[in-house]
Image (cartoon, rainbow, N blue to C red; front, side, top):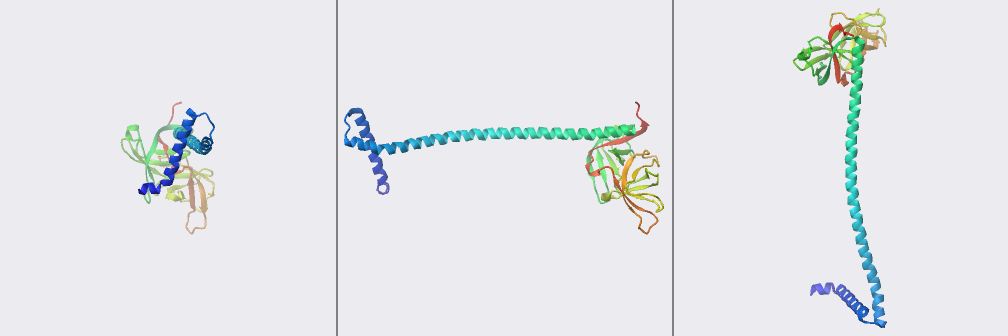
Length: 275
């Protein structure tokens, strides 16, 4: 009873619609007269039929739109997948190009110095408070020995200190335990290059009477028999003549960015390559 009271208006309208539809169907099938009641029913049913047709058309359009959106979503997913795959290929090509450029510089370096070299890749780093050491993927099975000079474009960067069968440690020049005999290329002033960690290099034991200035190129002197003569090390970045000591305080900026080392060369023999 509650249901009938709550929806009586709707039920009444629905009943009228059903009666009207029955009358129209009957008159259309059996009747031939144009009675007043038939006209009223037709007039009343026209808006209802219009609403029904509009609703059906709307549902149909919405369904077609939904199907279209589903198809577009699938197409967008495929396009995004293809874009990501192309990006990966592009990055791979870029990485290959950059590696080729680095290897080209290594090859050019080996040709410039005309010695026997062994190439290697950097596989690790040790950066303690006073230590600057890199690990490479070559060892004694590749012909390496402790003490061999190590290069990266455009010149010297350090020497081998520990060599195992397949891995070696390289002591970089910026390590505070590193020392190498060096000279000023311009006037042959001789001193010692020592590592200063993040500050780069220091050119030591140069008296204040010597002519050393910013921009001077520092190269290996060949003294000691470890490093060949004439290899690039760095460039003088600052000269302090105001210090109270006997020697100049000279800071040298290395040519090589030690934080970006990926491939290096080990000078395996001081004999020139056979041409």
